[in-house]
Length: 350
Image (tube, rainbow, N blue to C red; front, side):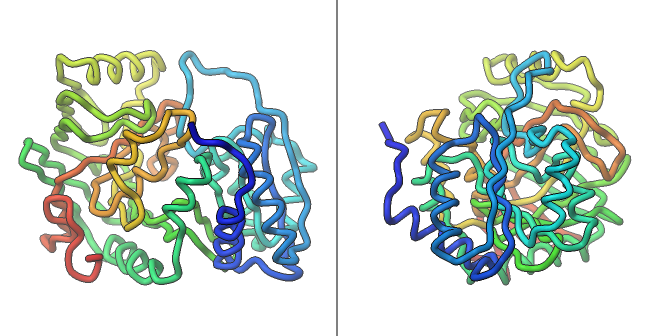
């Protein structure tokens, strides 16, 4: 069993990552957490900020009551701020938010106002055991490849995803907001998370059609599980319209989605691929679920990552959410292959 205590090597990693995010002497920082945050992450962040000479404060909110019909995990949408005006105004006056909330503030309802104030950037320290963060530490050299991948997405008009199992998905990328992170950012409004290494697009309305077949070894990150059976999805005009499969994986996924009683839970949220060379698929077998938020597996180099749930760019909002990384897929942008059978190609190759 892994212990959660301060280790010198982890503190050193936090100092390096914070410095990579432009935190140093005099940087105004808010260390944001909630009562259910992982204490060791808050403590490591506090010590690293102190060592770097940051001008920082610590804000802790009570974790809000559960309101959903089923457990909500791995959404990237923290409700910890709960619209508290004093907290929002304080965060707008900071250069950086070091975010140790359980789910993270990336999709939090308050982040847009904070971002639009024009000063603050966000660094999400995801709710992982520090050993996972140590292995997936963002590095400056990761930046150019991730930036190139995001640029390729922005310049493309169509993504096509295929696999030997039968996946054949077409995504209209025209006017789709695209982004991602290598795990660091230094400009106002920048959003980074550790682990980083993602290139993503948020398709607009009526943009996604086809079939997705998830196979043994693919992952359901909401459940923090590795599939042991096939799930066959039909996608029509952005929505999952059929989920076929006789195994436990398909059964649980169907029941969880149905529990929301919300059509938007079946909508496509984002599509993209992972770029982190430190992320390892097999590490899922080495940790208990409580040790991980499973962000590592979103960033698996060469994986195809697709997600169901909220997509604000298509006008769809819901708490129901799945992140579903797949191995051994081929991804093409306007016919140019960027991932072949799960391996990054060309300018993106490791």
